[in-house]
Length: 231
Image 1 (cartoon, rainbow, N blue to C red):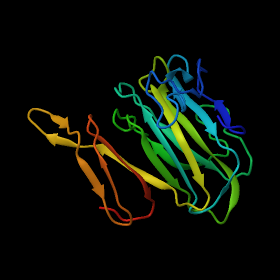
Image 2: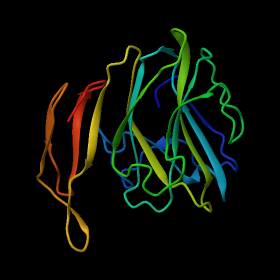
Image 3: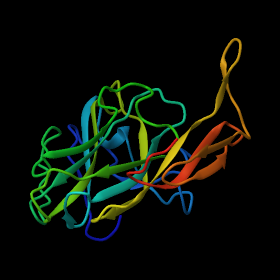
């Protein structure tokens, strides 16, 4: 974790882990060394617990149009749903996230909530890029952003929570971060859907990009400018 970031586990029934170095046996990183990402899992809490594990950035200049970009995923074979929030505090250098599993302290602005209804398909199981754009501020202000691994009824004996990773976090106070489109090329076969490798996928519009689907049919179109129109 970069210096000046905060890790605080407010899970109900504190577990044996908090945020920790990624485990390539679960899945390798999105970029860099195979373990060069940060992870959280069901062991953030004990027994059946509401998990609330915070990863808070350095102080940032927050203003309308500023963007944060990151990659995240859960395990390949999903049996227990995961969830992640991105929250914002505009209270200067404050690190107040409260002290309970349901408290948010000064981080009252919810910017993104991945899989709030806890479906098995609501959290991506391949590395996926998310770009969040800040809006609604009266002017530039100092504050912080936070990733919150927030899973109700999680823990080793809960119905939810497994393992997630976060990689390649970027912040631009004036926006302009690129984003990526990913998916799987499939064909309709009988009796089931199947992936198609070697398919060329191209987007055109404000920018253009092409790629080939891999042996599992997965593809990523990278570094497309935000705010554009694409087909």
